[in-house]
Image (cartoon, rainbow, N blue to C red; front, side):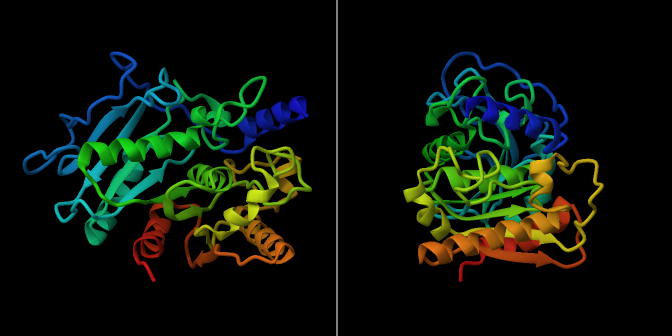
Length: 319
């Protein structure tokens, strides 16, 4: 089982995302969590406040409860209208791992909905390959990793840290990811069913872990870290799967094309539909309600900026 896991993980690393190296991050001074500081080039207006400053900023987060030797640069935006009970949105970058671009994409929606935006950048320097990022570092080179070391769990630790630094009172966070970020998001939802997100969007992901115990991990849940008894909980969480209607190119250079991925469909659009259909089938088989949603965004292809506005509406507008 372990050699199969490693081979599949390497296949994913070679073809899932088409990852590109991002800029190296500076090493932290020591094994302690960094204080939030304003970037000197962030263009912040107004006076800094405790924790996240007004406007754009960034800080280096050291996950002392997880991979303390692998720092994470977090790109932030706090609108002037945010208050301590306001929403906190965590946005997962795509394959390039760059945190500044998605942060900037979400600025107008942060202003509109009075929410803080946090974009953790899992650099190629400290989190190399897909095993560390979209696959969540659940499995290392030879064995399962402790849950505290999963990069999925780092999001929970980051949320606690930001709440502590800012005094935020919200008990939950919002979660969004596009492309490789969408892969990270739907796997976090799957393997951390108790995570404190209230709503999560996985947009235009290239490959999925099907909620099916007849399919071997990492393409399904057989021999995965998720006990079968917890699948009903996963299906009860608010996961929103989104597809751009034009994300239908089977020859996209960034699309995984190994056989296990092709079995899910020939395009990102088809794979998202297959993923949602599998969830419907599993919920029906278990006799439990499905709280997932599937949405198609008309006229948008594999475009993070084009998907962000519709994602914001679904995340911030609580029905």
